[in-house]
Image (cartoon, rainbow, N blue to C red; front, top):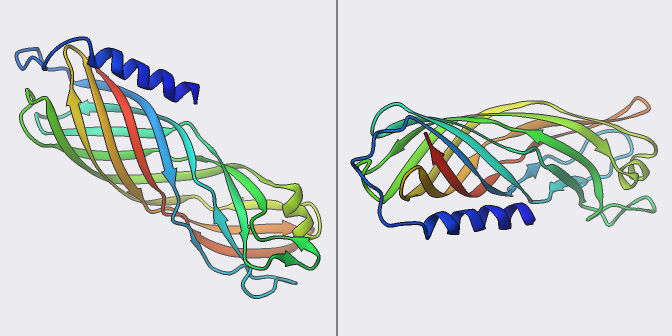
Length: 231
């Protein structure tokens, strides 16, 4: 929370520092951005299969917030390339389905956790002239997601009948973004955007050789608010 307050305070300080952007300034080809990622999952999973798994046993994922970082390289007055990623958040996976499995609570329990490293490479088209104060933009590109630090919780181990190793396959998929830039004096700018990413993975839980599996489409959407510095 303190990180988001610091970012917001920096943005307000820059915004209050002067008037409209000066179109006569020399073109700057590089930009760094820092801000807040608000990630909302639209997760859909197949029912878990494996020994001793009743019908309707499924999983869901909790939304997360994290820090956003990006580097942009200007290609022309309207086109740029962006490399964007978030500080890998720890994401909670929760049980969905029967209230209990046997006598063990399941529905709504955090059964496992994982961190995501998920960079995006995007081609950006920005509307209007470079001297405009407000510039909408559209982006399309590719996302790569690697899951690591995968852990079964105590609740997950209890549901599975013992210590469980979790694996999640990597994902490569498309990402699209729409946003707007507010150009401030000198080097600074403010940005807000909404994106949609297609992320899918095969989940396997291994409990002493007993394998339980499902396929998950995470399909996160994200709202980003950030401050940019061009140089």
